[in-house]
Image 1 (cartoon, helix red, strand yellow):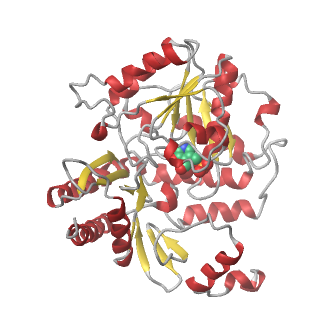
Image 2 (cartoon, rainbow, N blue to C red):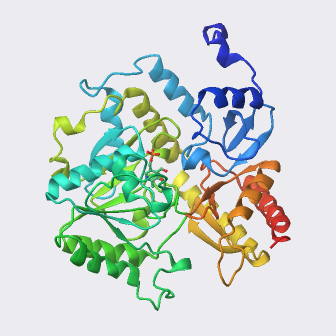
Image 3 (cartoon, protein in one colour):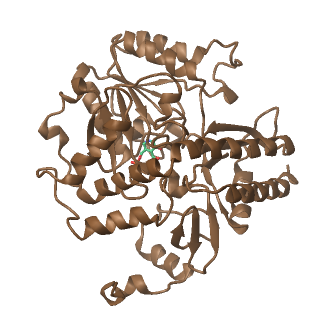
Length: 445
Ligand SMILES: Cc1ncc(COP(=O)(O)O)c(C=O)c1O
């Protein structure tokens, strides 16, 4: 490659300080970064990231649960390069090879009958589109979402997300109702599983009967909540809510923006671990492993309702993003990533459970596959969220070369959602670093 063709500004070796100064002057203040001294990342390989000083970090967060095939995977790079040299963009007003081939490839890995795909740009847009279709199909306005959920940043998606993610008074889009999520560690009914008989799930009937016209358009749920703090309800939560949703004529939407593409191990989609077959799956993040793309999968009878005007989006289904997603599917299949996510996840969860035995700050370890979480508490009995301590743990880990994510309505849950390329050696190192960080932070509890 002739480097001189690349703008000089991109070739320059900037310092973190110089870039942060630029941001301070020209980027809106709401765009903030992790860490007291934010990292300036310049390169990645596998599950390792490198900053502008050449320091390397084990990446347990994949941006935000996104770079599922890691960084600079040769097949990913080669596919993008191949497509860039041919056709970066045209709209869906014209047929392209990547859109059609990607849709066929998605149908091959989708749950039974979800053969129709619609490709957009992000998870928020995927959810908006799926909900629009559900409302159109059912001719009903009511949507039920779960407490602690996160479904995106557009108006409706934000309304469906836990109130904790809202920061300003805003007009509420109508027709949204809330269902308690199966958050057993902090059960909203004060019960214990399994004696509770999954009361939280059964409560859905009460909500529909008393807060809707006794019919709904859709129920939208994450198989494991990501932003909410890696919360995983028992499988019956999904079976019971599915039964009730069907009783009242709604479509069951599994938001797989975080759980999709093998992250939960062994299966392509998180919902497949519960025995429920949803009507719609929404996806993004790992879908393009960093190249922006979202979409949904559904049954032909629902897809029929979508008209040309409903489906138009300038960038939706563009050849470059679709080519990236095809490479992601190839890499996952050729690398046996579904199995790897399960095996590695089981190994890592065992290490995290060992940390729970050693450390009083660890309230609960949860999740499965490569979607694991540790909820930190100041006190095991009161379960007071260790919000400040979480920030200290993040700083300490970063200083030792480990990047972790943060979640939960109180910001006290460690999120572990790494590239599936993460190695066993990296997991062992991560365990050592977390162990050390917890030991230091616990001294002040
Ligand atoms: C479960 C879930 N759904 C939807 C979204 C929104 O996706 P995007 O940020 O691509 O709009 C997110 C983002 O974090 C998510 O976690």
